Amino acid sequence: MTKLKNTDFWLRVLGILMLLYAVFRLSVVQFIDFKVKQQIIRYTNRGLHISYDDISLGWIIPSVSVIDLRVFGMNGRDTVFSATIDHATLNKIKVAHLVLTNRLKIIDFDFEKVNLSTWEGRHLPLKDLPSSSSIEGKRRLRIDNIRFKDIIWLHKDDNNKVKAKVTTQDFEISGLQLGFDVGSIFKLTVEAVKNTDLTIEFPGIQHEYQIGGIEYKRPEQSLTISDIKISPLLDKEAFAQYFKSQVDRISGSGDYIRFAGFKLEDSTQFKAKAQKVEMTFNLEVYRNKNYEFTRTKPVPLPAEMLKQAGFLFDFDTLKVENAFVAYEELNKKDRNPGRIYFQNINARSVHFTNDTSFHAVTLKAYGDFMGQGRVNADIFIPLNNDKEYSMKGNCGPFELKEINSILKSSYLVEIKSGTLDTIAFDFDYNKYKSEGVVTFKYSDLKLQAYSGKDPDKTAVIKSWALNQLLKVNKINSANVKGMIDFPYNPARSFFYYWSKSLLYGMRDALIKNGAISPQHNVKKIFILDEK
Image (cartoon, rainbow, N blue to C red):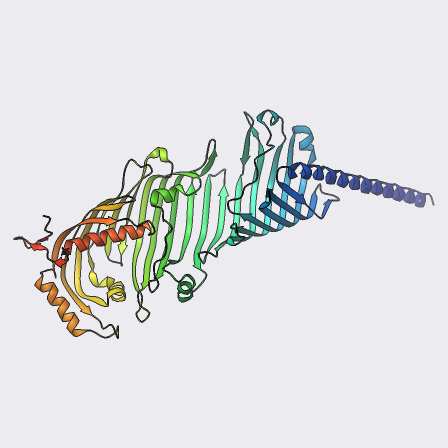
């Protein structure tokens, strides 16, 4: 009987303790809710509007859960950003750290189903920011792990049209620390970042980028981006019909981009540095030339393109290994598209940067043209306006009939035989024009023409006339030099600028004053009359 009474007593004590704990827990929830709402009012004056449906505490593990969290950033009447989070949880909050060390430590911070929208060109008002004198003594924050599940981010223009859509299933940040360094300077550090299955869609250009994995480790100073894919959203025909103009349709992949000795600096300006960057890639570019070229927006030259990265970068060594690039174009609907390609592309740059204090970037590259001719190129990119861009290199030898697909697609002409022994080029260029020289040597050139009505049918008379023209003008074999003087079109890419500069020099070598008339000297070498 006594034992039964003791059991009943302890059950009552336990019940009272649980009731007290429930009252305490409810009081803490109300206190947290009150404090959060105080902060919400404070941040509302700075353009931030925060609301939520419910807030709760964990019964055993110190944790806080927020249900249906909504955050809006306003700039006057315009929304700068909006975010909705179905469930946000702070797990294992170390309250003792806050009391003893003035640091708040959270083991895990989880966000589930995050929807974020941002608008181009809109910013929060910079007002009511704390002064440097009020920063000292502020508490520090450390979160061991931040995990985001199911993220959708829409970036829109001023008319609310989506410019970019970013989705990912799993994004994790480890070892995040927020605090103030010596001199009251705000400091943010991250130990590691990991992301899988990231997709970025650009509806305006009808392309999608996929990244299989991103992994950053601060202690090892390493960053690896792996399994990269570029995919058009439409097939070749639908892509051309969508734009109704000449727009490059790009597809490609890359196994990796690896950064060694990687670190981020944020002293006076954000800067990414690395001792070595290695990458490999495959690119296929397709253009339908049945449509007009209508682009008017300027395309930046290489230096301007580097500066548009949005931040400074400085890599001691950049290496491209075994890359592949192909270009394909359709000139007429009733013809097969023409295609050229470069494979085994390797490039190296020592001190690759967009920091103008270093004046210039140089890049040495080599690869195989159409699987045969070895191409070597030295590229000079000035980062200031004190010098001009330059390109110097050579290619050869290779069988000329390797370029038949692009020739037939463009001109209904194929090369039956012929060898390009070598071609060398050396030219400077700027935002006005390119100037330089091209020399090339070829032998045993024979052509075959096709009918305009039936591209698969040989035009016998036209073929005979073309080959007779080569013989009469003695240019079926030649060693010639041409001058480059090609005007810059800012609406065209710098790859177009390079290729057209070379073609202009080759044309100048063979055609003088509208006629095929290179002179033939006693050494059986054709030279251009340069009077």
